[in-house]
Length: 542
Image 1 (cartoon, rainbow, N blue to C red):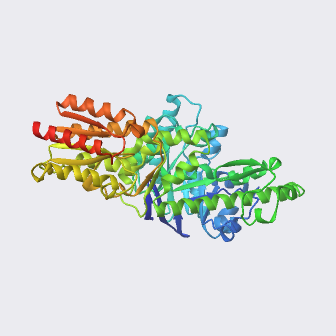
Image 2: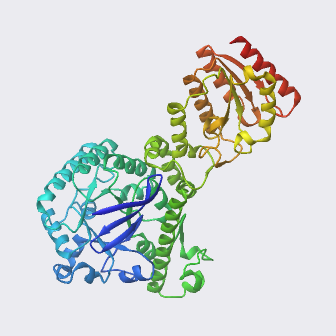
Image 3: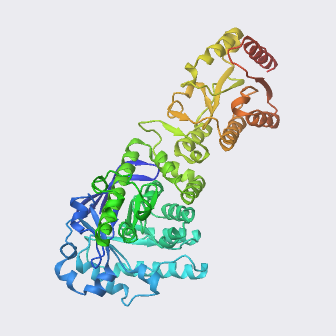
């Protein structure tokens, strides 16, 4: 098995996954195939829509079609010449409480039909179970996973080791560690369907990230049942490389029309907001005059176009380094998705560990949800662990951010340089100039062209959480450095009193001389004189 990563952003990756039927590109969506009720022919999924792989259920095939898929081979049976994946029947265990085949029979059947990617017969945890019951599913899944390696006979199939535990995150962590220690090619997060059906995307985000931390980072992660395109972006951002969906067909059967941000009912629509090949030739009114079957096929194909288009947007966002912006946009389409995004801040260090620190484009910062961005975490960590102020610096002159970037080229800085020149060469190098800015905190002026400090745009006015974060980072910077004095130029219109009180408090704690000058207009003569007097006073006192 070969999984080669070509591009990445956050925990999302564009990769090449090698299967015995050929190479497929991740992030990869597997449309679910039900041979008994299939509104879109499998080969059409590849030839028309561009899906490189499909998934079907080995348990259902064995129960309904017995040996026929073995004799014909899965690809011929499905009439699909791309990559194929099989689920094992675990979902049926969750729904019905059990299946009539054991793991040995399911594994032998999956090998017999010649699928490319196969799943062991794990025991799903489910949603409404006690922790004790969940622990039993984790233990049994792990036991079956270890036994599996004595059962398999083929080495050309990629095998999936599911992670169980459900909403019990400590069990998910333990399951991920155990499954990750076994030589599976791919891992999957088990039991997510009921979580999504209950719109607990916040819990799902925690489950994905907990599982991701436990499995080897180089192995792909599959998310079962990630059906709606509105959640594809956050699933990929949190590290899901593969996912499957039956929603395109199930929604069509119910007369539901997918968009990248939600779902509409055909009976309530007057317009199609999409320009896919199906929507470009119909209106809701004309579609309603057709048969139920024709409407179902139309909606299924439209839903597939929406799914594949969203996948392409996600891949382009990864290439551009803008997966966070796309994810944030999608998550604002539904409160449940936004709740999931809010959980990500708890895992910001993990995201920062594996996300690129330099990108080809700048970033857009909207509000405090963006504080989980890896670029912010990476900068603040490196500033406190790798940066040392100039050796002669005695006084920190802390200035508010300017609208122009880089900050040292802003018109306001010309006035500041005038103040410093008045101090004379003897005192000039004892003043260290830094800017406090959203969302990064303290930015020493000599670093302000380092990515992404000048390559970002921030929405104004700032929200309270962002201002508090900048205040916290300013305090931590001053606490760790060895200045004898701090002079703060405070812009109360943008920052209120948060920065002033936070900096004053830490200076008192460290017995550092603190002076403040309230800014009106930085170009005013009085302000310049005040800064000069305060700096002269501080330097003379050190």
